[in-house]
Amino acid sequence: MTGRVLHAHLHLLDRQVVRADGRLLCKVDDLEIETGEVPYVTAILAGPLALGPRVGGVIGRLMTGTTRLFRPEEGPAPPRVPMSLVAEIGGAVTVGGDVPEASLERWVRDHLVDPLPGSGGGQAGAGAPRPVRRSEVPVRDRLSSLVGRRVVDRDGGPVGQVADVQLTQDGPLLGETTQALRLSGLVVAPRHTGQLFGYERGPGGNSPALVRVVIRRLHQGSRFVAWEQIGDAGDPIRLTEPRAALLPLEELFTRGDASASA
Image (cartoon, rainbow, N blue to C red; front, side, top):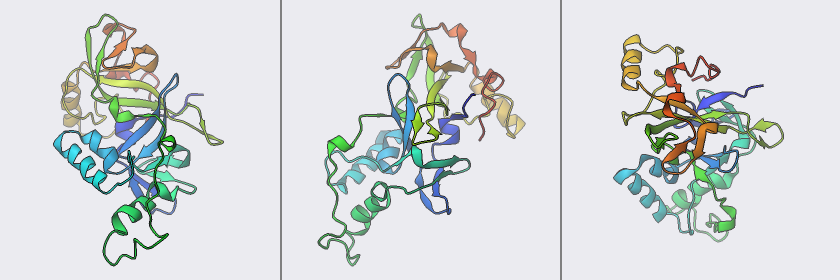
């Protein structure tokens, strides 16, 4: 049975993360991935330390630099929500169960609220920052590190750059019943033309006809690379196939990706 298919930028990044009762937790600023033979998404990353590297440039460095000023511990990491707690992915990402308070609310309280005069913070035993030991931070990568990476084919010829990452929910078990979102492919655009909005991927959706035509013309020549076609996931990403063997992006929905939904 084929698992649900999503695209990271279209269906996850920048969406709101809410509790089952509708209370807002954060936004999906990046995704943590476990690399290895079967790479898969392990957690949602939130906050400036997750978003800054995605934004890049002066603004991104300012976001991360300012945040680190308020993080006295060594090697501060962004708050994370384990994917095992994700109950539903739709217009928002709904989290069930108990979200570890240290990942979100406690960080905000300890580093932003308690230092304010009159907040009641700074008392003995109340709001004291918990040191983060390096052993507690897993050595993993971020999904955003793949976006923008150059892709070359088997013969070294340019294919383009990574514009999005396909995720299929058939990875290792997270908890007792939830399967992880496995990295199953890459959407590769031939040139840097801005973010892809989904209009260029197959016939689905209710996008305006003119917008759809312009976007597809702009991204003509984009290709889908199945993860099995990647020989080396370094920089650049090297494929095991010639460019001519790659699936044109406009055919993606008609060849097994029709289950993707916005």
